[in-house]
Structures are given as structure tokens and as C-alpha cells.
Length: 168
Length: 183
Image (cartoon, rainbow over all chains, first blue to last red; front, side):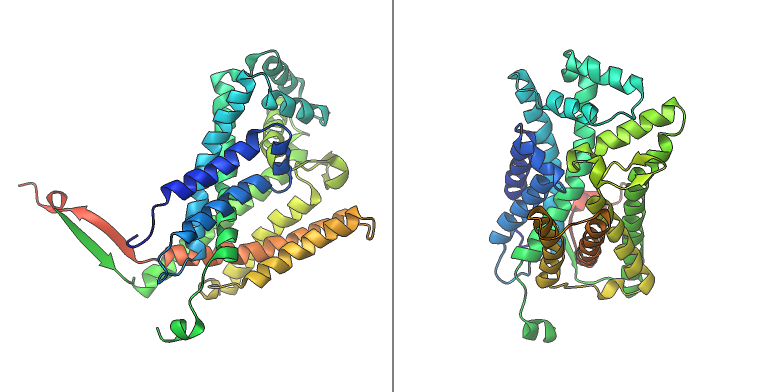
């Protein structure tokens, strides 16, 4: 849209916040609280985007939602790449995550358990698993990133004065 | 060479149609979302393929909820893949969207105030903190109700955002050569 700042850098920064916080072992557990880090990343993107907004333009919830969505998609990519990176380093956040997931469940079919076992035996970096992880992350991060951006816009967004709206 | 086309408004009927399509789409996806987690206990009762699907759905929700059985509703003898608070938030969101659509006031949801949002966050947060401090003993019901309140409030913000996105002026650039007839 004319007169609006670039979305790229706030979305990238927001995506990086999501990626780092969602992939570092232990810290990533924060996402169990309603996807806290993804909401935060979307909110950060909205805040940064709003900062560059021209003073005569209203920063709407819609603007926040759009920038949050883009940040969420970047976040999904960063999360997958960083998780892969941590696995290469031997920190294995993915395996830890799967282990805790399976330990808490007894009502799963044994085939699913076999799949997890194969992952824990070193199959975790298989392209299929990375792809499935990226796909799930893209869905979740885009939804919650949008929500984070929207809530960020609601909290940080500037609003035109009542007189200004009435005069229109 | 480029031509800039800027239209500041749309025909009201076109707006109305876009609103309806967008709002019904959001409602559809929120119903799919709720259907996903509500279906898990029933899928686990089915054959192996259905059980695998249930496992995948539960796996899908793992990064966004702690999934503690003691804090989750049970259906058909199995725990839902999301906790009671998340169940409340998602169900509240869906009910909020549905209510706004059925009330026919979607286009009026423009600027929900931020205090409205803080109220929703505070009521859910306060319940969690008081429970943590043993001041108040929270139950599945209180968690889901406070979550539902937050979900309904978020639905208002989502609809307002959707309203603003759909309401935006059309502004795009068209290259002249593309607009010229081929012959």
C-alpha cells in the first residue's frame, strides 16, 4: 500500500524472535502456554512495523494481522532450520520433545511408537520429518503469528482522535 | 511505464459479500480446528488408521499446549489433546465468531478497545495466578470458562482486523504492455 513502510525487516525480526525462542531447548517449552513465543514474535513485528508508520496514517488491527502472518511464516522457517541446527550440534531438542511427548501417552498405536523410535535412533533428520515439522510449524506459526500481530496492533497501535474520525 | 490505479472505495454490496465470505471462512477454519481436537478421543476408538490419525493430531497440538491429562477434559475415556483452558479459548473463539455473524453485526465491529483485551487477559491470568498461589482452587470448569471469555474477546479483535483488511482501498500497479491488446 502507498505510504506504508517495508514489511520485510519487521517480519524478519519477528520471525527470528519466534525461531530462536521456539527452538532453543527448554526455552521452547514456553510455547506450551498458548504458543507464547509465536504470539510474542508477531507482537514484536507489529510493534516494529508500527514504529515506521507515517504519523498521518492509522495503524490498524488489519496491518498488525498481516505483518504478524508474515512474521509467523518466517518464524516457521527459522524454527525448522534452528531445530535442525541444534540437532547437528547434538542438543536434539526434537528428540527431547518427542520423548516427553511419547512418555505422556499410552493410548497411541504401536506403529506410531515405532516411528518415534526410528527418529530417536538417528532418523530425525530425514527429509520427511523435517518437511512434516515445517508444515506443522507453518500452520501453527501463521495462525498464532497473525494473532500476535493483531494483539500487538491492539496494544501498540495508534488511533486517530475522535474528532478526526467524526470529520470524515 | 506504469499506471497506478487507486480506488478508495468499493460498492457496498461488494463489501458485504467480501465480509461474508471472509467471516464464514474464519468460522469454517475455527470449526475445523475445534473438530480436530474434539475428534481425537473418538478416533482412538477406531481402527489402526484412525488411531494413527489421532496420534498425528495429538502430535500437531503438542507444541502449543502442555496436554496434561489432569488438566484436560476427557471424552469417551480419552483426554483431549489440549488442556481445559485451550479448549475454552478455541471454543470461545468459535462461539464468538458465530455469534457476531449470526447477530449480523460483523461490519459494526471496528475498534474494540484495548481495555477489552486486557480484561480478557487479566481474567484468565488472575485465575491461573490465584490458583498457583493456592488462594483459589481452579477446576477444569473455571479454566475453560475464563479461557472462553478470552476466546470470545479475541474473536472480536479478529473480526475487527478482518473488517479493516477487507475494507482497504484497492491499490495496485499495472504495466501498460500487459493492458495492451495483443493484436
